[in-house]
Image 1: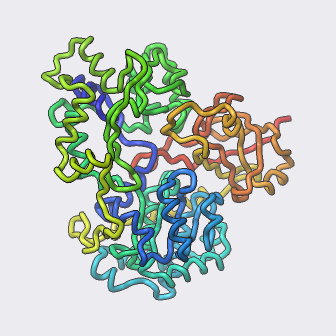
Image 2: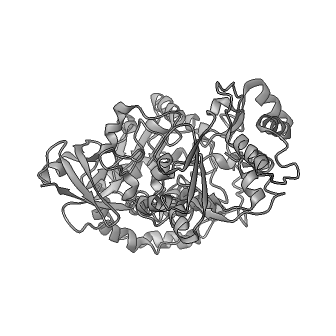
Length: 551
């Protein structure tokens, strides 16, 4: 992933930074804790863990490690509460399932916080000792308009009360597992912050059986940052101009770049505002080079496609987002004589362009890998060579059990939290007509963005469909599998409509991923260009669409 940056940094080209995944939540948690990785995921199976709250994380299809740990724990009697806009598979194993309207997790969190405050369930001693600005936040919580919020959340109050009672019952024995879907909204990072407040005011931080699980890559940075610096040579080479990946379409229009290299990314599928992006990719004066394992949406717009080595054909380091640690791939042989990894391609290109490199391209891919291993601390290097992986934490490790966080005064910071976006959240929850729906765009269970092969043709039909609650289907006077027009201000296209029992009334779903073969449209033709405001990732779940019958 990082090797080609040697080439781009040496030339001083523009490179993309950021991503489209979890950046909003990362930014939000870093503002509070100074880091976004604060809980060992193995604490899920700690004896002290009595309640697990799985909030907006479809672990059954997207995270088999966490799914296994949670199922193991609930078999031993631990309670599970699932919160999601869809009835995801893990909800079948839950003691309580809450299905809020899209966009309303912020309001739900404030209602929960208000009820905890009213029941005097907060851990005031924890707050006084470890949290900066808690008095301001408690005052803000006390102003919550309960009846107004309940009407917008879409959950009966007695279910929320049941959740609150569980939180009180298992105070100091509760873990939150927060998924990335929660922050795929314009204010996603702030929403993650409000959800994390529940654990903070309960004192469920820094103890065995407590915490907030989000991305774990922050734990890996002491190991991965020096490796990345060596692989990219970013400290030696001139600084390139950087643009946010999420803005690629607008940047291609505004800056009039002449050559675009795309690797490890399928932007014509995964980026929002597809109309603008695809128009930019077909500019006559833009030469597009795509390096990939197989043909996809983006290769359709390429002037040339360079086949890349499969991951298992090149030695590399792997850093997990779920389990803190590092592992290695020892690359096997490639059956084709001209096989090249991404780095090897750009190294050869540098030689052919006769770029003076001052030794930057002296090492080949395997030599960089081997030298990278030698740069690691002795214990990690030895374990990697013996086992192929190194775990940074034991099952019983409790990060930050001394409650000293990497903030300015070592305390948890919440006094800065901003609640001024509340009106916009409430306005977004209002719909203008009976045929307008909230659009969610989760990945399909047969499609992951890091595909290892082309999607089987039998599964492509799922991307021709828009899914809807059966009651809404009947209310609109539509038939199962009927072809309908789906539209909003961004785009309009036809889909087949199908009922889905996992959806809430008022919500429709188009799976992200490949384009429909009906119109070459995908879900991201409808998603907004406005990025999430803290981490500059995609606000994919901020769209609404209308559904109309095709006469």
